[in-house]
Image (cartoon, rainbow, N blue to C red):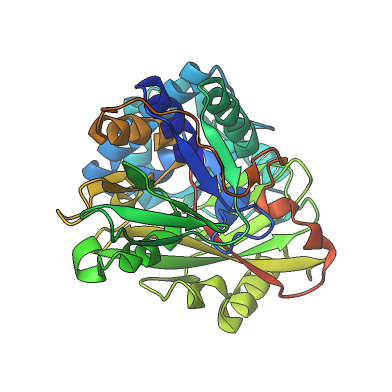
Length: 397
């Protein structure tokens, strides 16, 4: 949604009449569930393997800072995060700190400091080191609220529709498509799909099949525990291969290696496999050294990528144009909320400038998007015990 709001404002500034359609947070089958696990990225998370990863981490870090500076926002909430780095990863970690320009923001923790920050998850191991880092959870709702306000300032129409939109070829105009939304039929001059994991299905409604769009969906399972667990707001334990973030409401979102499936059916990806739920629960109890206390539930976080792209390269944004059969159709994978503004500028530059005057639409589908922004970790069913699952698209910052 960050991309749609940002892109709408940019496109309207070029003279286009812009309509953004979205489904409500409460009902969208492909909502951004990993908002609850996202954190502001210094770049360290992606700078742990190769020199290419380090180059990408530097780009992501710069784009993140530029976006926040442009929007005059500081989305970093709570105390600094903690990373536990295995000793074999220390040389690249040290190089990353230097090249990312954050040496003054990273501090090695002594045993007492580390124990106080990670609580029951502290492990006294000679083969790893704890660091205080600038990474921490961020309030994506604040980002979306600012982008929504800016889009409205540019007279962008932001509408919520109750049913998923449908696309079809326009029988009256070759190489054009129709958008069916809540009973209305629209014939846009240009269409930008930034629908996350629903993008492949929308393209296939236009006859653009997988062999052409080459988009695949991955699933990561997460567990939400409805209480604060760790003193630090973010713990990324790369030695133990698990991460946890905590929201301002005290929800802890936990995930680990081994609960990710690649190239899954989007509909099936909405459900958390039973083996993932059991593994998450067992690992959480092992990390915290006690049974789970209080209610908990599971989320299925879905992300979309180009086939053949592997982490972290799949986080890069992608802007593509449909084949000649639909020259006005583009699809965008922002990859990360940090890249939303950069992706928006790129896709808007690809759109045709208006060749005729456009007045405001006589009728708009759905209702104006006024609702408060909901993070998935703040769902109303947080108090439900056990393995309730919800679907979502991963959004990183």
